Length: 123
Image (cartoon, rainbow, N blue to C red; front, side):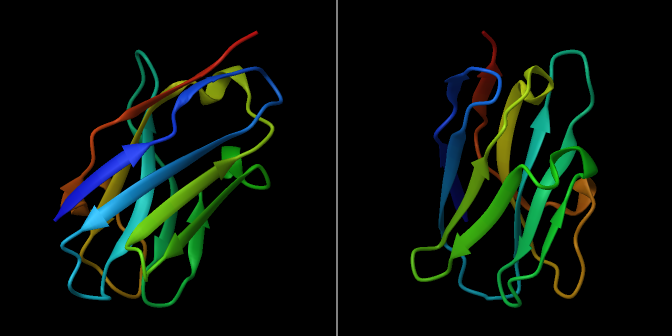
């Protein structure tokens, strides 16, 4: 399995960015796909998850109502639409896949990681 993330960049506070992650090799529907982020000097945290099979989602409290995760199983892709960006959203964002079903994983359950894409929110 390979995950290729893209779409990071510089945004102003209140702006928007859309991250994309192309996954290859996901032969099973029993995966949860998600995005995690790590800000400078902070621990990595899960931002959003989506069940590939059920389409259910889970969000970090700090991004609820601003970020939306979606997936396109026909393209083996997962997206993160980020609206109303704030400086505290600045971080390296990682696409991830976990071979779990029926629940959302902890970070140590992630099986596959994509390379990070940097999001910087600054005026």
